[in-house]
Image (cartoon, rainbow, N blue to C red; front, side, top):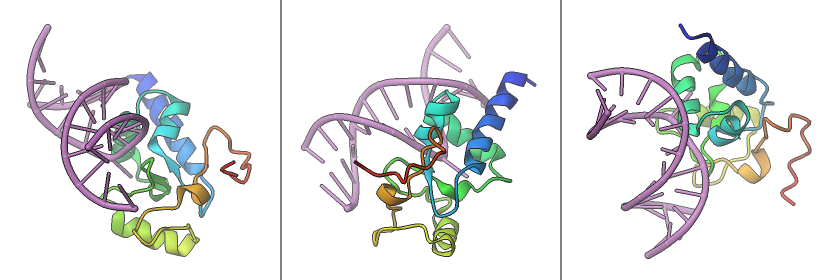
Amino acid sequence: MDPAKEEYVERVLSCVEQIPPGRVTTYGAIAAVVGGGPRQVGSVMAHHGGPVPWWRVVRADGSLPPSHDGEARERYAAEGTPCSSTGRVQMREAFWDPARPEDEVERIS
DNA sequence: AGAGTGACGTCCT
DNA sequence: GAGGACGCCACTC
């Protein structure tokens, strides 16, 4: 096994674990922090995303992967994650940047 | 080495 | 806001 790969995976999962309840982040944001590309982050989650709150990781536009749609919605309802009537997460309110864990109340300027 | 695929992103219509 | 097309990065056949 390539140790670099395991470390990369560990870094991705670490970011996901740090996501506060009721907030979400995107694959691209994680990729921007841990490196690689958004697709690679998704691949890591697919294979090693078991023990982490994967439902707090959504696409850049707030839409959920068909694979997780059902599960994630219940999590959001339980955590109070702001969602749109169309079924997508309100990124403007719920987005949390892994590069800025200080939580600056994501004021969207 | 080349082509196909995926829990994605951005631009355009 | 919704849908389609092209591009990126890494992995697998």
